[in-house]
Length: 103
Image (cartoon, rainbow, N blue to C red):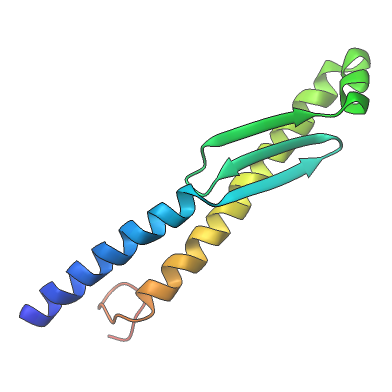
């Protein structure tokens, strides 16, 4: 019982460290001149629209909206993959029944 409590404390500590790392990890995704930068906690850090993409936006607002959506989705997906990899390293050290570890 005490060992499980120690393991849970260790996981919580590692999770806090990962959260810090994620906050300082910047993920960039680009789609046709629209660049989105988010951190690992999926907070938007920066959105950039190239002159070319802006010029096209004057012709088609819908195109710019679609490119923004695609860039945001790409960035979020990348951040989820990075977070999952970091957590996999932590969770791989522990064996919890029902959580994908050996039962």
